[in-house]
Length: 139
Image (cartoon, rainbow, N blue to C red; front, side, top):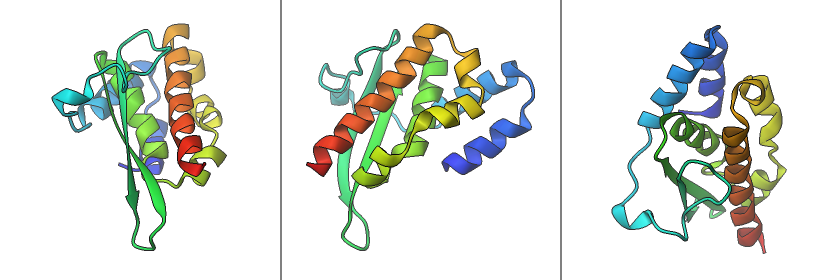
């Protein structure tokens, strides 16, 4: 699902209970990670829940290098946040990732106001981890 589709679906939901349920559904749509991906190297620091992110590099049909991200969490809502972040950043070039500020999107979706401080910190940690991967790929 694209980030545009996710945003459009969020806009259809007025109640935060419905938005939380939608986040949980997004998380359930993630492909499971291989068992060996659940390791310390892939673990995202700064999240209260356990979150794992795996990064792969792939070339598109024009030979441009793109970063592809896979993720998982042991918490339902956080897993939905992982799905949201992956929809925003996965499959993009390092330059595009570095140019994309996720915070306005999170604010527009109301996440800034409705997430606990721990979940908000975890969300920022996921974005920073992805940006760190993009900086490394760009170097």
